[in-house]
Length: 71
Image (cartoon, rainbow, N blue to C red):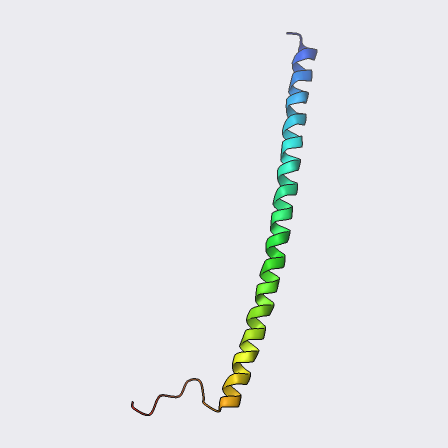
């Protein structure tokens, strides 16, 4: 095998690896973006539930950390 053929083969191999790596990077990027959107949505839901809990505790009038009377 001549040196030019060897170099051409190496270049073809590198191009195939780069193509595979580009595809992997795009897949990972899409996955991370979807996960970030889900984390953001869940964070907002937890905050909203915390506010609703605080409102419910205020409406009922019972402090959250007070010991029950039988202690």
